[in-house]
Each structure stands twice: as C-alpha cells, then as structure tokens.
Length: 173
Image (cartoon, rainbow, N blue to C red; front, side, top):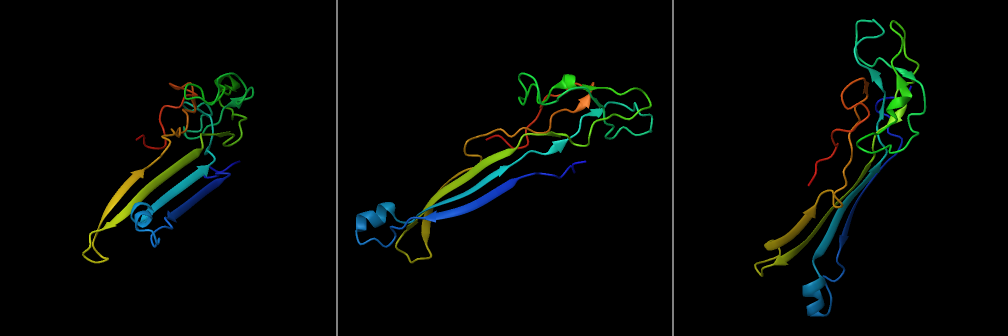
C-alpha cells in the first residue's frame, strides 16, 4: 500500500529581490526607491495519505491500530465532499464482519494539501555614522493569504466526527 509518508508532489521556492535604484544618479530616486528588498518563501504540496480504520478490535487480534474496514462505494463521490464538515463519503465504508479483515487498501485517501506564501519587505536607512550603523524598517507576513490548511480528517469508523476535519495543520494569524 501507499506509505504514510508518501507526498506525491511538493514544491518550495525562496527568493530575494533587491531594488536596483541604490546607486541612481538622481538623489531623489536613490533616497525613495533605493535600499528596498523583498524576500519570500512559497510552498505548494499535495496532501498526506490516510486510511479509514475500525474503532475497537473487530478482527480480534488484540490490537486496535490500523484495522481497515470494508469499502462499499466510492469515497470520493457524492455532494459536499472535501469540506471540513465531510472530507470523504462516509457511506462508502462499512464495518467488516467480526473476526475478519476489511478489504480497504492501505492509505487510499488523501488529506488537504499545502499552499503557503510568506513575504517580508524591508529597507535600511543609514544614519550618517558609517555603513555599519543604520535603522531598518521591516514588515513580515507569514501565510500571507491566510489560507487554512486542514489536518487529517477523523477516520475512525463509528467514532465521533467520522469523516470531518476538526483541526488545521498550520497556525492561523
């Protein structure tokens, strides 16, 4: 089956842009537009795989970790899916018969992906006491577009909030 750590795609880029007007022949242009810098980190990644599991020990193996259930339909078909209230079709899964294994594959579903942009803009103002002494204006924004990245949904069949996302994987601003 698919590994718990399988993330099919991930992209990350960091950049720095500096103002080209530092050494302008026009003093006004150099003072107003020079010395600025823009830094950023952008990340886009697919979600993490997960498995719907049974609550309790229907297989009677003495362990309640990762006991897979039966698949009775398409987990990605139906209205209102991929929302926090219902990430997947909860009616697509049924509890297996006692003392039997479920027919679900390992990690057939995927959680929400990552889309994030962090930016900072800053400028140094020299105070006339040498190049090593300056004031710095800095503005930074983490998760610039304030996008919520949902955590794994509750995947224990029969458990409270089954199929719902109850937390997020990033921190809100």
